[in-house]
Image (tube, rainbow, N blue to C red; front, top):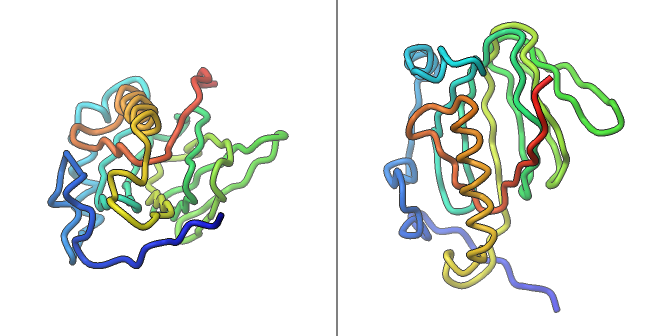
Length: 185
């Protein structure tokens, strides 16, 4: 039986967001240069991972995260249950996919990955990119759209990202994102 998808309405479902509800306003304007300057001031930027991130928009079925990485650093292999886009804002990155496939992304370029595609990200030089994740929402209460077990996995994956270099307050806790623990290389 096919499930009916809901129509999105402004502000709908944000009550299920337990953190940072201000990131789900009907209109958000973001100064990326200012955000990048702030990310360089975060403790996470000084860590061994050489990465800092911040969630810029957070809705029940959609996230935008700004990620800043030092050259030569790598984000461990992971996947999202939703579709993702990577818009390279500064620098160059290499996306490592399964079967030893690699894709280079330069500033101004956009990469789109279907849901569930395993990948890791390597910064070839200091790099900044916007990560967008989108999930399908079903009709009904937004909190019922994502089972508790799945939300728990999401929190674990985002906690791991924070431990690897996410900025404080940068947790995505997205429905459907998962990560696999593969050592950085």
